[in-house]
Amino acid sequence: MLQFVVRRLLFVLPTMVAASILVFLMLHLVPGDPAIIFFGDQPVTPERLEMVRHQMGLDRPLVIQYLDFVRGIPRGDLGRSIHNRTPVFEELRTRVASSATLALAAFAVAGVLGLGLGLLSALRRGTWIDAGAMLVALAGVSMPIFWLAAMLIFVFSLRLGWFPATGFGGWNRLVLPAVALGFVTAATLARLVRSSVLEVLLQPFVTTARAKGLREAVVIRRHVLKNAFIAVVTVLGLQFGTLLSGAVITETVFARPGVGKLLVDAISNKDFPIVQGAVLFIALIYTVINLVVDLSYAYLDPRIRFD
Amino acid sequence: MRTSIRASASTEAQVLGRAAPRSPWGEALLRLRRSKSALLGGIILAGLIAAAVAAPLLTPWDPLEMNAVDGLKAPSARHWLGTDILGRDLFTRILFGSRISLQTGLISVAIAILIGVPVGLSAGFYGGLTDRALMRLVDLMLTFPGILLALVVIAILGPNLLNAMLAVGISASPTFARVVRAAVLSSREQTYVEAARATGCTNARIILRHILPNTVAPIIVLGTLGVAGAIIAAAALSYLGLGTQPPTPEWGGLLSEGRNYLRVAWWMTTFPGLAIMTAVLSINLLGDGLRDALDPRLQS
Image 1: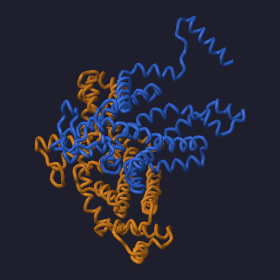
Image 2: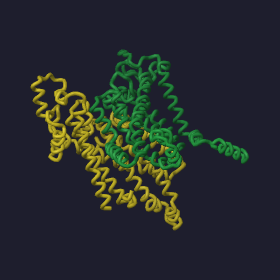
Image 3: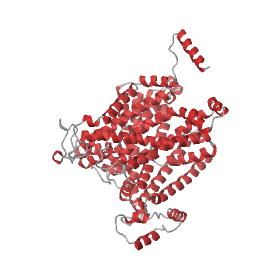
Image 4: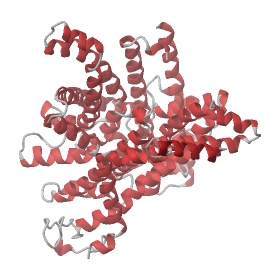
């Protein structure tokens, strides 16, 4: 187990180094002089351009620039926004709470809805409930998040007036974004829960449990659900990337001041220090979550660590 | 020799009163035709492609022609799906948009295949250091969420349709590399590859003539399902203003145009979204059917 944990932890390092190189090179891969990009459409004298190039360290070798960039990361020095000159770290820090709340709420929606639909569908196999639940799930996996979000705003905010359409703060501003974001993951989860529950139901230990005279509810709770739960954790872990990607879009649709919206706005405004910081931050979070999920598999299913 | 074996198998089948054995592709086609959902998906998709091709014949309107007097008109007999703020017919824009959206999906997947398949073939066939180096790179790419990679590509290259396709294609390529590598690993040790090597075939010939054909089935399945994902991803980029730029009609872009008028013109958002969902749903149904038909072991 320890060997697996160490090996898995060691993989985080090259991943983050690669992410930092990618993020660092981003500014240099963009066609044109980064200093000119820095000024955008403003007119600039050659002297001023040279000064900014010096300030940005662009007149030094690329390796030195990269090492400086990396040295700044542990201190939280990710540069400053081109547009409002605020530190990138500060911009990220003020938006983390909004994104984290959304991700957690969407995770809860996905878990409850996905598990519920999948279980209902499996236990009522072949009935109209099964067909209906799987139709909802199929529609869910084929639905663009931004469209579902817009439809939720239209119905529950503009027509019924139950929830505010945009903004951050208070549970009522969280419901629609969380449902929009969680639904697609819930749909994927429901399909997998259904097939894994159906598979577990055919196992000999379920027949044994029934033969012992256990009530159906106990069989389901103690034997079927427990085994299906491993699949749920696996899928939720794998779906975290989808959730994170969806968060970028959901935050934009609901105008939530999160890291995803910060990134999209920064790309549109060509605010590269912010783009670099946000990409690095999302990559770090994603890597850490993947690590946690992998380690939890090894805990849940000891066979996995030998793979 | 081969002919005589086939002939005898067929004779034996006739004697036993069975149909002659089919090729693996024939078996797969038969399984696909038996799947009602795949058939439904295929029919819807064929309809969408036909509508995209025949778009100018199906509508009297021009997708770009503005007519301010007709701005924000609700669906009616004149404008089936209503009009946008500039008076452009929404049905026409969705119809012409299908050309771009479907093409975007196909081209993005083609880019993913062009990058991913050679990587997977080389890693699987050569093994050793080549395999380790390429697969570490693939693993690294897979550790980033797809949209993040796509956004990085867009940030570097700038927002437009071509770059959106490149972005989606590049971010989807690691999955192709992984699947192809797995298929190569299983066929690399087969006796026919050994035989080809023994007869003096070059590596390139072995890869192209003997190994690549065995990776076609997983590529078809992943490619089909990938088109659905690519349509959504490209539409998402356009929705965020980072893909197709106005006034070009593209489904994601149409949805984006509609979001500011949600209160007064629900149709501007509803119908482009339904178009995306229909296309993606049909491709998913077909893809699921293809997966079950081409690789019964993967059947859900």
